[in-house]
Length: 236
Image (cartoon, rainbow, N blue to C red; front, side):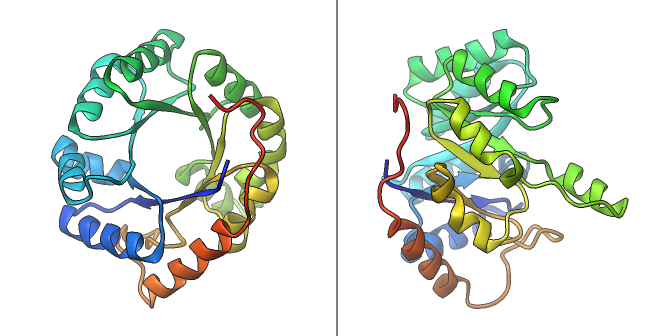
């Protein structure tokens, strides 16, 4: 599987999200993510606006669904999302409902293991219930809370190889990655590379980062795309 670069639009304003998305696509980004802050601020309308502006671009709706799985997935798929996100900590019936809605409405499902006591088991659980992708995710609050205690901040890279070895669907690592770590994800067998806070979004203000972001993104995309095929054990 060729590496895919996804930008997380963790913004709270649809106009800024559209502007950032257009810039990211010019730079070579493959997928757009309607981040959780954007969905909270703009809801279905935000996803619809992205779909209207970019009719041929894959869109991820980062719902972080915990309940009401079928309806949430259905609504986002109808709004234009190609991918929806459900949490491993949700009840297994919710995950099954999201997977069924994805099949019914033409969306694929990304299962997120954030907060799982056993991250590897959480990833396997998601795959077993039919998720098409696994997001290996160390949360924003978790990272900052641990760092505030003077301890080493956890990283998705700590167990990324274990997660990749445990499942046969494509894996994405999320949560405070440095630029070097994000670019290295395909080397770990994780072909879905997400760029967001703090790489392209200001992690404190949730606005587009300052600087020559487009040129930086172009170099990042070129580097990731040049990696070549990433082996996935049993691509669905």
